[in-house]
Length: 175
Image (cartoon, rainbow, N blue to C red; front, side):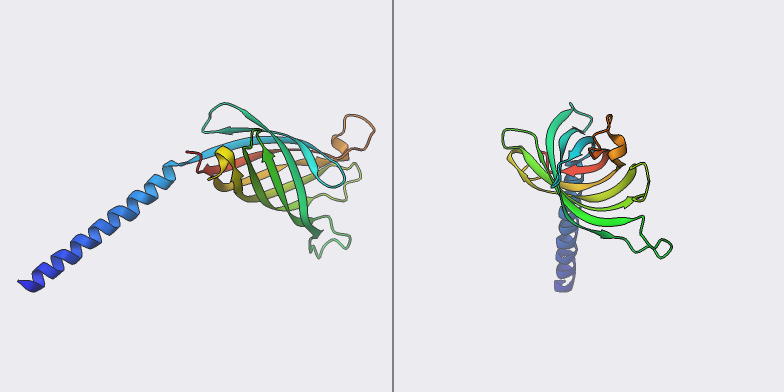
């Protein structure tokens, strides 16, 4: 009889543990939503500075100022091209939605077509969402970014480097 009670107690504890783990995982998933965004920025010589628009949960469009600082960049190792056409690097973007509401995008990127004579290049990025403040103090998530950049995007002959891309991903912790 004692052995039966011990087994029953063990099974009950195990079942409760599974319910708690499954419920907390399901709760966490319901607090992650899709994100979509766009960026339009110009290179100032030290950072990409511009405007982003965001949409979380298919809600209203939000606008934020972006300051995107390169934290490391080097030629990629492409054995087929001696003066490489591919660069790799990292950057940190701060998005400021106003009134103390910010978060950062911590990014790794690969650029392509860096030898294009017209100055039209392509960037592919992925990264994490972190370091939020204000109403974004608990956010985290993942995203990808793809789009063109370079002086060929300028509408005049100024040679200003411009960047425009689309963000897609998931953001958690908005609630």
